[in-house]
Amino acid sequence: METKNTNKNDYTFADINESCKSDIDALESTISNKLNKQIAIVAYEQSEEE
Image (cartoon, rainbow, N blue to C red; front, side, top):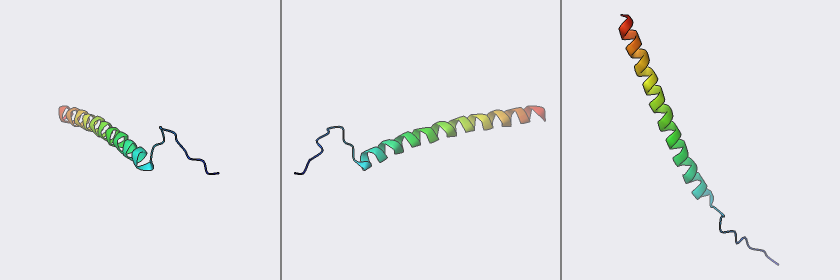
């Protein structure tokens, strides 16, 4: 007798992959923004020293 998975919360790999991709994109954006702020701060501090 064959059993079938009827779980309504069963996600396909594509669904999970798409969800992870959007999370990763958001993290990359956050990291990029933070790095850009740090670069701007360092550049400003260096210009003040000269």
